[in-house]
Length: 64
Image (cartoon, rainbow, N blue to C red; front, side, top):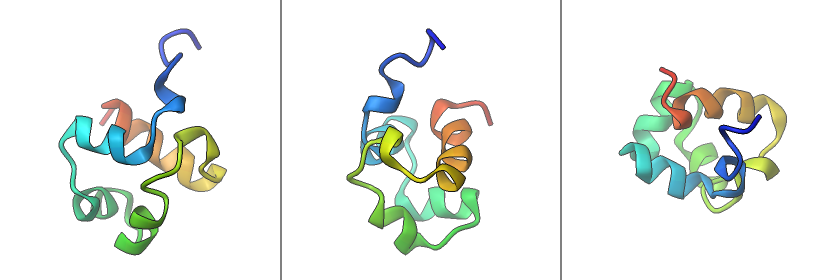
């Protein structure tokens, strides 16, 4: 997909801050633990395991 060329190369923290979410707000939107969001905060989106990645992408991209 051409529209998300550099999107998956950014860290979760960077994408989260760009959308204006705190870790707690993002965890509430995803219905997961805050500790899980903080654990993957410094990893790149492309390295996040698939079940969590499919939940993260719409919220971090701004689809919702």
